[in-house]
Image 1 (cartoon, helix red, strand yellow):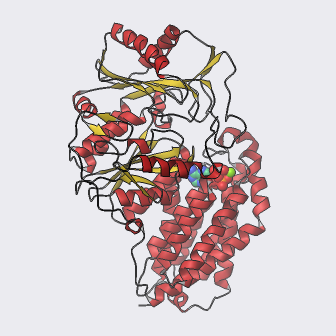
Image 2: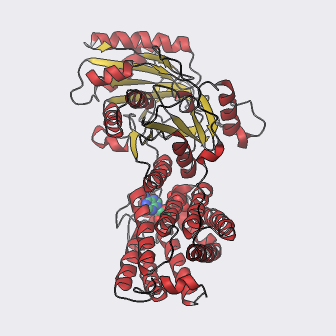
Image 3: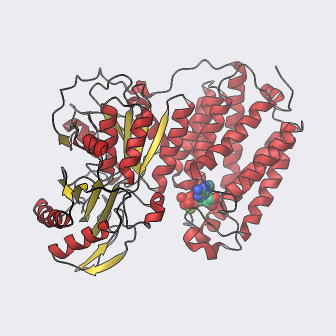
Length: 585
Ligand code: ADP
Ligand code: MG
């Protein structure tokens, strides 16, 4: 039970404020998370970790010299929004590029991925290494599908030590990947955890039972067992992990016994003693182990065992010193505090919008308003469609996202911002407010279109083509859906191809849009014949047959409305130059 709070909705934020107040020598608050309060040597790779809150010391507790540079902190058990990750990474960047590292969960992948696209587009070289250590979540030949649990620590520690040693981004990325490839964990749970303000735990394990492989947010486990003795538990965890060893594993291994919340240290130590003996009996050498709380889940009753298979370079990095609020090792020379970190360091730079770009920015805001109208008209229908095989939130999610986007765009456009800035703020607002897969995808697509339009002296037809291409690329790069997976991509790709085809043939903008929108609507309807292979609808694939994909349908409706708007010929001077192929300067 989580008991100490004023308002449950503010729990994560206020806990983070208090954490910073207790650790000012280590961390400073930025909008979206925390960043080291001590100096980071110029050119050092910034390791930005993160994820939902409720897992302390993951993730904010691991920020400090020799480990993470910053942590993006989401709400309780919820991914930070892309804008948060982006701002935290910008505050962390010391000129050596950014490595994003976090556990493999769909929401985190979308939001961190969107932030990465944005950082790269701005010239801050950014890479990602996902943590995929949980052997219960997918078989060994599908490592990339496994989720991340206590293995976060080994991957972050290796990456942080590599950055501290002054290695470049390629090397830090390579070593973090290698650490992940050689880390395996398995967890057990004896009972669930309760979110602040909730009356009931998120999930239960029957009394007297133990669930093997249950995820840290209650994701289904592999099997249930009667509560074992400590010796039996040690045997079970060790034997399962020794069936899942990496190639060229060697015999030197870090063992980490991690408490998930309410298992006491004495119990963890008792278990650790037995585990160490089993590993030693198996001919392994246990190197610099850890036993304690490293990645928790509020008051979840459970624990995990992680084995990290060392080689020479990994062992050196594992042994290197680190100094963070929750994890300290060896000795590091004290660091000077950074000059007061100003919030506005992470704010957008000022721009001087051109007249053409400010005009186009107002058009962009007007287009978004049209999009909102059509989403509002179809909100219920989209929700019902998503309820057939998904979770029924597509209508409300799109509505929340596009509402926030329109507000942000209107505000930016009223201030005379460039088209790029208007769309960037709209996209950010969209993904922060909408939640869900489609929110992250639409948000990043709108931002990408904004980055393509930027702040130019004049606009021409090729800019519209670039914006459409950037919009589509953002969604396919982030969501990684293939044609035929039954997602919005099945409407998007035909839309893009038709648009570019018309555009290249010299068809004016409004007509190109109209033709492409018709293609998109037809393609969306055709998704009724497909089985979903991506997204939440996948487990209920059969139910979805005969019904079109909600995300494809909403895209078709939006494309149609935008085309109608351009056909009505809004009298904006910049449109004359966007329309048509050869027009303008
Ligand atoms: P959630 O799936 O998180 O509940 P929504 O219900 O708002 O989010 O959106 C569902 C839609 O998102 C699906 O109908 C599909 O079109 C789209 N979608 C899901 N996963 C992907 C993906 N990986 N790539 C592209 N689109 C996707
Ligand atoms: Mg949904």
